[in-house]
Length: 306
Image 1: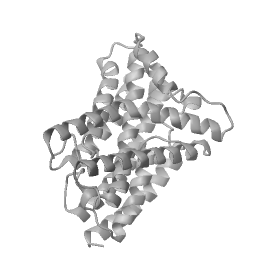
Image 2 (image 1 turned 90 degrees about the horizontal axis):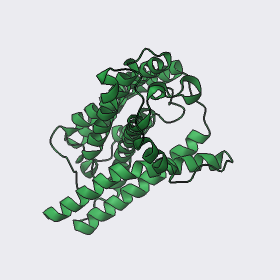
Image 3 (image 1 turned 90 degrees about the vertical axis):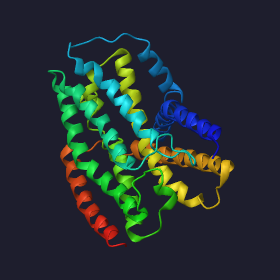
Image 4 (image 1 turned 45 degrees about the vertical axis):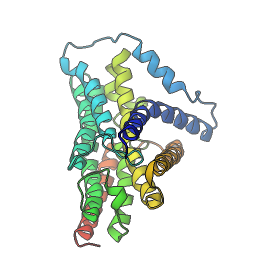
């Protein structure tokens, strides 16, 4: 692939990472409103909200540096996670072992959320941070095993290369189910959004953030959701068309397919969210523990070549 083509697709990837998540959030809000027979906000409302937050000075409830740095850590980590994924046939940041980097920087978003929550002597922020920690510790192993199963199947530690070389086995089909579940839970979608829980703990860590710090934090979590769903859409769409998508046009076709699958996933998630109530944290942990035990069996199948 020519350098200018790689640069062009990399720039498109950066634009998608930064600009598409608020649109997806706005579409999801509109879908949930329609399902619940409400008017709902405009599709571009999330952009307006972010611009409002980013134009305002924050109020600092504490002088701790960790409180101020947490949104920036979350934002940088979310963007970094998205950059190691494939966009068409181009991976903006690719190297052997980036599968571990993806899992690490993705976890850093949750860690930043916890840092912000534990920086204050506030019941709501501490509760939100505690819940985020419990969910992360219970679902990250499932996500790791799901991706690890694909790695065993393809014999590569480059996350961008996996969807181009994955083959059909029993363990791979089960890994897709594990990946879909872990992406949904890790994304904090209803009924797994207990770390924010607006009506219960006033958005957890976010209840003490304001101004551009709140805007950066919310933007970071939207990018994290984008990265997770882009990972799933890539693993679903690329294996279907990789053999007929060659050259520059083929790379563009793959990218368009990834975007279409992403929108379909977000539409389905918004519909599921609109019809479910929030779970209790103990129910979530119990459910994640059961899925983790199942994931170990899937990993054993993958190790045996099945």
